[in-house]
Length: 293
Image (cartoon, rainbow, N blue to C red; front, side, top):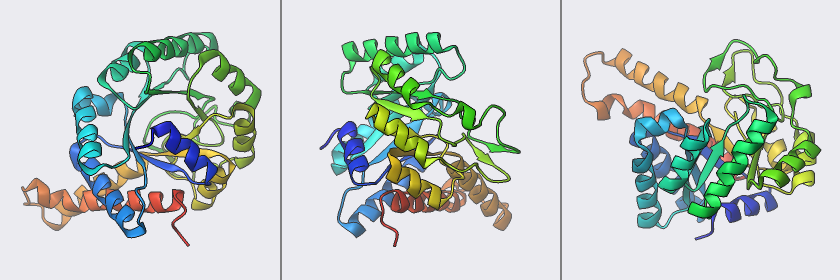
């Protein structure tokens, strides 16, 4: 099986992007995995997928438990499913994920100074090199707000001025030696009620040309299909989807209880929520992988 980095570079070469879905429990994980397997069977190709767990999601699932779960699926089904330690705000917890055997980790130093962010990112890379050389290290560079939630308006500080500058990104990558970069290119975490801002494919192209490093789009929920296609063509090879899944999950449970308020069997009242999560995953996979006509 190819490595995650090989899949990312191959996706970029073919104007495709790998879908990255955040989960908080095994039900969500299996709903997505079962659906991506079905899509792959339909098209005759094993489409890679990345499962993400933020600090809170890792705590809910269990740090080593989620690694074991993903490894068991990958080995039993010989399927390219990978695990990412999403948004981690301390060197210690990032290294905890490296120790546990994650395929990829993100050290998020967006809220601290540039110098401190660089120093901490370098520390993570150095630790990875000693402990788990196959684990990819990603850093977020540029401001895109935070939180997988519904926002009343675009977060303060998100603007064209705070988008990632290509030469600064190149310098950060060279100094930190990260493998993957998450830039600010018009994207925001969460979903904005009035509509997410437009993505900027020209900035994506400029960053890719300056860095030649796999690029990740965080805050994918709420962007238009047209914007997704444009930034994929420009150089994005991994796209994060989280808030859309959370909204669908909660709405599905609420609808189930509105239809039968006395239902007690979890597999019954969860069915609608998990099917909604799988439907969103399928829509995003088919779009990102160029399977829609």
